[in-house]
Image (cartoon, rainbow, N blue to C red; front, top):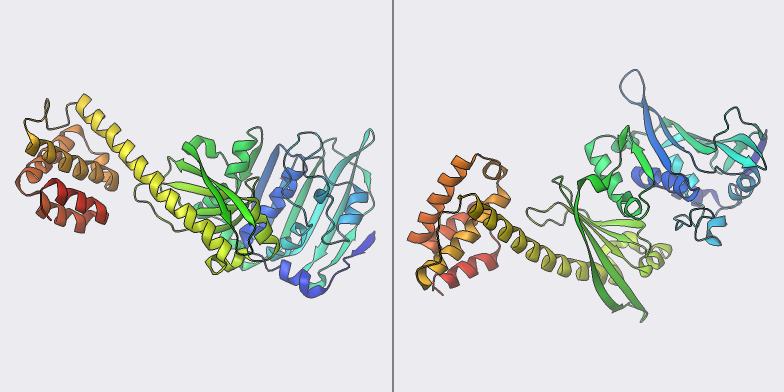
Length: 412
């Protein structure tokens, strides 16, 4: 048994150990993926009173060799990944570069252990490391010995779990975890990740993905920065947020978790090499107080508004076409005159917006839909603007929609 002591100030290690729970857990998964794992499992073991007794992250990667462990656990900031930006066999882009992930495990629990099985020539060897938050920066390591199992990989176990680690359980945690790894899984579809027994499969609930060029911007210090926006729309409702990522799509910050576009469930990833620069400088956590972050997010907001306005128009046209095919649309033939044409446009706005906002209407029977649509037709015919004011209060129409209705009705 040997002891490794990290050669860095304790207060710096303690700051790493105060990472948000999901960020810390994600770092452990990234380490597994950087070790070319094709399967990673995040599991939770409960204690007798229903709390979390242990967090376990296991993978089938190539593990960490004993010599590399002795080097990397001793030196913070000297990660081998900095000189190897891609994995050796699968040519995957590396996530970690600075060797901080292992210390962030202590934000999840007071006791952490790593068991590595790796190929040494023709033999698989295994050894373990362990550390305690009370003596952060000090690790006990066993000597390597022949592994009882020929499979390589790493298993990380965290015990004496902190109360904050409870944020890792439940539906919201699964969604947050999926948002982090969705771009990676899109890029490397041969990889499987399981979270608390649930396969993380963003492709199964992905409706469409759109890449938008945000163009070139000038940073506060005069450097030029390029960025693009990946917008993923989900079939599962309730997801939303804008994430700042480096140029490889690795998420660095959940910047706008509550940016809402009515009727759409989405994740938007701002990808830029400048995000990694800001992360290294410690500026990302300042959010929009940082001028460069604010510029990137302003550009993302503007393009997202355009994107979802177009998407809403597309969805509306598809819905109207479906209603016409199934005889739910209350009008027949071409408009008789300009007044009826304007009336139909007002009706189309009302009806498609109602379908988008109210699931009860969207999922109701054809008979109920036909009745409601016929009533809306009559309302649109009698007093479009008055009805628009009522529906605006109930449905929260955008201001520009009400202006469009007033214009169609010929009023100022």
